[in-house]
Length: 435
Image (tube, rainbow, N blue to C red; front, top):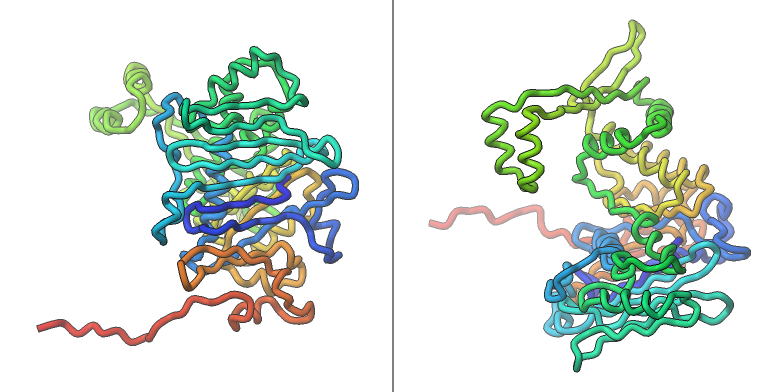
C-alpha cells in the first residue's frame, strides 16, 4: 500500500506536491477507512481528489501512471526520450530535473523508491527498505556523465550473486530504471521480485472516462475461467437496481468480405496478425447481452441498448472485485462520469465496508455531493488548484485547512473558503460582426 507519493516538475506540477495516505489523528470511522499494514501502522484505503477543470487533478494520477511505467517498461534504445513533459509555464523548469518518490508497504515492510530524471536520462534512482528503524539500501543508481552510463551499487541486504548484479547493471541503460532492467534480466529471485510485482500487478492502469467498457468487460469475462467474476458482476448489478438478471457473451463467426479485407489492411497491427486473419478467412464478432427480468418474462438485450452509465458501472464492478479479492491499487479518473451520484456513493461504501485486503482507491472527481456526506472522512479529501502567479498545481488536504468539524465542507467549498474557485467572466459576449 502507498504511504505517500511525491511529485516535482511533471506536467502542471512544478514545486513538490505530496499525496499522503497516512491517517491523521481523526478517529472517525477508522475501521472502515484504514487498513493495518503492520502492527500499529494503519494506512487509508482511499484518496479523493477534487478540482476545477484544468486545475491538475488528472495530472496527479497521470504522474502515478508514469512512475509505474518507469519501473516496468523495458527499452532497447538508450537514445529514446522518456514519455513525459516537465512543467512548461516558466523559462527554467523544462531544463531542470524532474523527481518522484514513493513510500509503500509490502509484506509488513516499508520501502522507499525515489528517482530523478529528465527526458533524456535517469540521473539517480535509489531503492531502500526498513528491516528495522533504519533504512537499508537495495540499490543506488547514479549517472556518470564522463562515461555516459549508469553506475549501480547494490546493498548487502540484496542477496544476488555478483554475476546477477552485473546483468542487471548492464541492462540499466540511461532511459531505463534499474527495476525495469531487473524485470528483463534472467537472474535469481530476490527481494526485487516482490517490488517489481508490486508495480506490474499491484498498481493498475488508470481507468479513464473514455475507456471502452464493452471491450474491457469482454476481456475480463473471457479470462473468467471459473465464472466467479460473472457471478460477482451479476450480484453487483442486481444490488444496484439495474434490473439485470444475467450477462452473456454471444460470439459469431463471420466470413471476411472484400470490404472487410480493405479495412483490415489499414488497421495499425502487425502484418503477421493480418495474414493469419486473412488466411483463416473469418473473424469472430462478440457482443455482450444483458438479461432483463420483467413481470412478463426475461428479455435479452444487446449492449447497444444499455446506457453508458450501466456499462461504466459494470466496469467499476470489475475493479471492485479486484479491490476486494486481489489487493490492488486502482486509480480512476473522473469516477462520476455517466454515473448517478447515488451509484457513486454506493460504490465507495461497498469498497470501504467490504475491503479486507491491502487495496487502495484513488479517485478524481467533480462531484461535490460527496463533500456533503456524513460518511466521508476529511483526511481522504484533497483539492487541486492553480497558483495565480505561475499556473502550477497545488495539492491541498482538506484536513489541513482547519475547518471546524461542525461546518460543512460542501458549503465551505462552494463559498470559496477552502480553495479558490474558478473565476467566471461576464455572461455577455461581444459577438458583433466587424464591418
